Image (cartoon, rainbow, N blue to C red; front, top):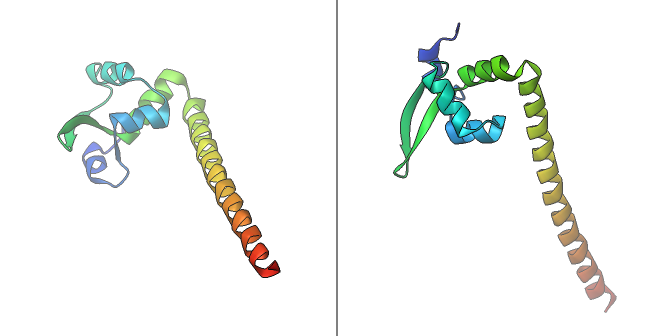
Length: 113
């Protein structure tokens, strides 16, 4: 695969959980399990608060997705994720602006008394 897997296990951002892979790349648990069984993905079993999860090498997941869905898949998913994050931030900012406008009106009312 051309990936230094040993260092990937210890590099920040070099691994991700199966749940993160599902949400970030839009793949299913069945696809992950199938790739593991086919030997395309290495994994380690970790636990968080007593709940087990699969820890995967990010570069292997990306290579698997490139092979399965083509080169544009990852770029498209990255843009979709960035768009979703931008929309989330915009909603948050709109809520903050509305609250500030309300407070501004209250303060003006106080000054006009």
